[in-house]
Amino acid sequence: MPSRTLLPLGFAMLATPVALLGGERPTPQPFKAGRSVTVAANGMVATSHPLAAQVGLDVLKKGGNAVDAAIATSAAMGLMEPTSCGIGGDLYAIVYEAKTGKLHGLNASGRAPAKATVKHFKDLGHDHIPEFGPLSWSVPGCVDGWDQLRQRFGTLPFKDLLAPSIDYALKGVPVPEVIAGHWNSARGAKMLAECPGLRDTFLVPDGDGRRPPRAGEVFKNPHLANSYRLIAEHGRDAFYTGEIAKKIVACSDGCGGLFTLKDFADHRSEWVEPVRTSYRGYDVWEIPPPGQGIAALQMLNLLEPHDLKKLGPTSPDYWHLLVEAKKLAFADRAKYYADPAFAKVPVRELISKEYAKERARLLDPAKAATDVPAGDPRPGKSETIYLCVVDKDRNCVSLIQSNYMGFGSYRGAPGTGFGIQNRGCLFALDEAHANKLEPGKRPFHTIIPAMVTKDGKPFLTFGVMGGDMQPQGHVQVLVNLLDFGMNVQAAGEAPRVEHRGSAEPTGRPAKGGGVVEAEAGIPDEVVKELERRGHEVRRVKVNGGGYQGILIDLRTGVLHGGSEARKDGAAVGY
Image 1 (cartoon, rainbow, N blue to C red):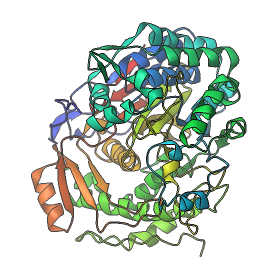
Image 2 (tube, one colour):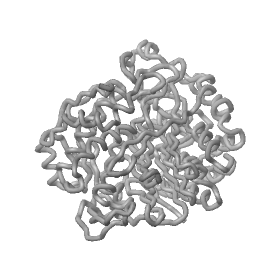
Image 3 (cartoon, rainbow, N blue to C red):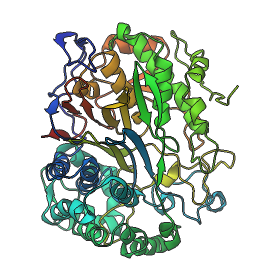
Image 4 (cartoon, helix red, strand yellow):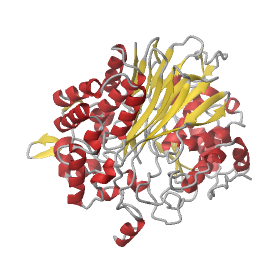
């Protein structure tokens, strides 16, 4: 993947203060971002493709609200960044409704086919679900998610919301640098070439063969334009009971998949109550399991008793605490996070301050843990896109949408224009595991939108992409913003770390103490001290994922947008 020149910048204590956050005093800016904050008074959209952000902004300018713009932007991203998302994937969202002051959570993730059982996979000789191919499929939830959002909060019909993407799909859209880098990976290109349903859509003619489009080349997807046109004309039923569903099931029948038409007809999204913890006087909101959002809340609870502001972003103590908190949260993630319709998930206990105090006893400030067990909270690789929208009335949407790994399963039905996700590979085949595979069950999920409020008012809508990086990224962004005084751009762009190697929700064991992947901007002294404390540290140019965020200045009401350079994206406003 091409690197961006902004990332090697390290931390430096600068004299320039950041803008006031909720009336607080200015603090020194400890990191200089490579681009300025986007500011606007009316509405704003931020996502990882600039043209998709413009699609959403156009909807706002024409009178649509934040939900309308989010759906239009999500549809554009399915065309423009198919390496990460599309209507073959799932969707999660948090909506702040300005007129009621309430937050609403949407879990638009799909379920396992009715024929998917642990016995079926064991009979095939599998000890885990394959990462790619038709056996990794769960029903795509994105389109029903759009429909639920539109019915409850939207003001515009699908015809208007999908029209810009249909036009782009037919006329073509240039491929930007970072997306082209993912598209042109040798492994991904080979896998696309092996699937007839994807080869002719996502590989362009090149002499006697086909290849991924390069940066700056124009990509067209008439098959996706037709799928969008069917949804525009017939609504979500076009995907779940109509022509699109029939094509997917026919493809499944022909390649060893488990889908039936009934699996699609039975699919429904679920409205859920977002859950929260407090941090430095702010409320941080996430979607409950089967997503991993509460891992970020658990980490924040573990970090809050420490004076991180005093430690600062160049302190080895801070990075050590962050990694150790992550290990504790992810140990619980591996054991407890699952579909609450099938397993009892003790969410309230896991995100409580009392439980955090108990778990904090395992934090050794001088030594890296190598064996972290899950706690007892009872009372007594992945590509994703994220987008956020705030409109003139201050309705807010935090939305994340994903195929899971790149093009997902690297399988798709001919003539549909999209790949089908591989979320099903996140089930465990251990009959005793909370996240075990069961028919009609939703797998453990990595995608997590987030929102922050202050005294009941929206303050920040944000997200970080990239599998296991997402809760770790949420925490680092918030610490950068609320502890270290960075602005909304620098908070996401600052050098960061990702800890890899925790136990997985598929039932696979942990691998010792794991590896800390530190970006180039993390000071050498920090790396050396972490190694002295027992961490295995690996230098990387760029950690996975990316970040988008929109902050509402509580004093002036002005919108501040950030879109960092690990992606091609932009924050745009008017």
